Image 1 (tube, rainbow, N blue to C red):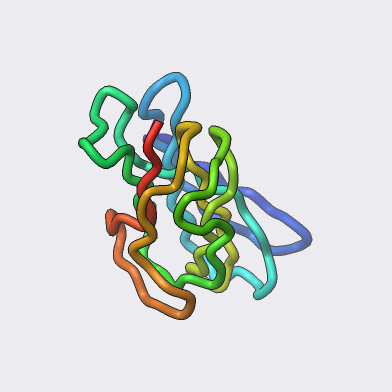
Image 2: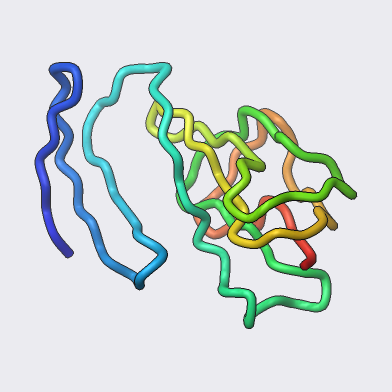
Length: 125
């Protein structure tokens, strides 16, 4: 785990970054971020080899509230496409799907609170 201090528009953020692999990273931000900021967050869903019979789950990487759901059941999605907007620590986080496929389930609704690891949607390849 590496610690970094980043200043953006006069706001200072202390960030801890843990490298999980070549394609995925996890970050923890400890600050009071201004409202209306946006960040892109890669889902911590399992690799395609860990798919269930219904598909690959896209899980919440952190606790927060669902602001928007960008897809419907039956929609085709591309890998890295934004599927859910999650508000956490007064920041809007785009949650993306790790695989391309078809949305088979949506397990959340707008305004709902979720915990880290909760399955938001499922995508079948």
